[in-house]
Image 1 (cartoon, rainbow, N blue to C red):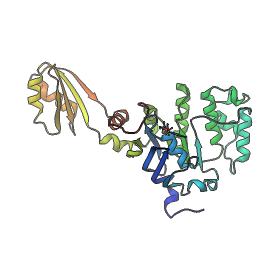
Image 2 (image 1 turned 90 degrees about the vertical axis):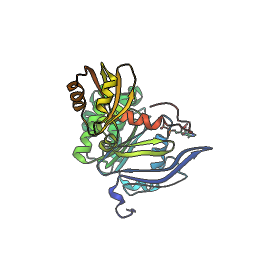
Image 3 (image 1 turned 120 degrees about the horizontal axis):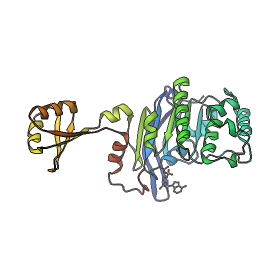
Image 4 (image 1 turned 60 degrees about the vertical axis):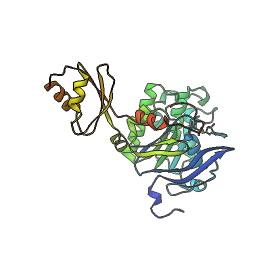
Length: 317
Ligand code: ADP
């Protein structure tokens, strides 16, 4: 199998990826890496280039430049992956005239090494009761479940999913999240999930990359990304002026804003809200409320994508 030493263990390694449509440079020197065993979320504003990135990775779009390796293989070598790499795009595209069961049996015939039976993947995806329905008669959510079932007939090592939650109801989202988690835990399957639905991704992704202005603006494990964020605390009390004076010499506390209307915003670095509360109360300040702003992927995402954009990304995720 043509691969460079060390690269085959990495589900994905991309460097210098460039793609333009006419005058519009969508991807500019993009670099991206998915670690073995990771569930990696690729997030970005609508129109930021997530689908284009996935299409270039799979050779569905011709990249203008860049080195792309999936399990050590270039896009034009992916036929050699023997089902180790599978991708499911936003618009599920199974043959509309086949029933669910026929589509899965077809996949089983094509699959070099089917490790699951059609009935098993139907049960896994909660579509057993639809097995005799034609694909064209399924709801979008059930078509998506059938597409995922179709891709899981073998035992892929790396799965790329473009907007996997679109069209799913809450139960469907939970089923797909559970499936991804189980496959990752039990079989070590690595995932690259492209989505704008950050709250869902935050539930399962171990790593994130934020695509902005044609590049990966930030990429790391979720723990490290959130750990880098400043923790904020809003203090609502009866004497903000005195409260300011009391907290300003506490190590690890920075006064971010004194709104003058009984509300003080602090940045905390290694200091707990309880310690701030104790300091204030012990000096006779009546603390009405402490509001902790928890670090979240959404706030990090917003802080990055709010920076002025020259590229025509369409709207906020
Ligand atoms: P995302 O998946 O993040 O929503 P896309 O990759 O679909 O973004 O699109 C990125 C940009 O590239 C958008 O501005 C889109 O209009 C443009 N684009 C995508 N495909 C084509 C194409 N085939 N021809 C011209 N422009 C395209």
